[in-house]
Amino acid sequence: MAILHTCLNVADAERAADWYVEELDFERSWEFTTPDGETRNVYVADENGVEFQLSDTDGHTPSEQGDQYDHVALKVDDVDAAFEAIDHHGVVEEPGDQPAAGARTAFIKDPDGHHVELIEPL
Image (cartoon, rainbow, N blue to C red; front, side):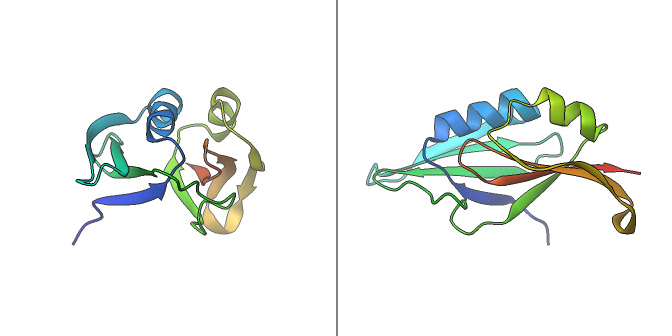
């Protein structure tokens, strides 16, 4: 068993995909629109091939909490540098050490308010 992808409801799949590509170095992998033409799905993948499905449905805007989705965690080499370099859409938690987890972490928001945790193993 393996994780294939996580689906994020977004207001604009193109904008969300651009952010994950430009700010987090993901790559676009594929996309499709549902047969009724109402939902566009754009997939972006990390360097290991794990994907996010960015789903944009006409007439539906995700809630401020990202439709009750909690967060996605991404490993980075340097949390502080990534936190400063990424053009995020809000700070949830500034960089700080988490000794119990053996990591330094920070939380930011993507363009639709989904929380993204940046993790640097210590």
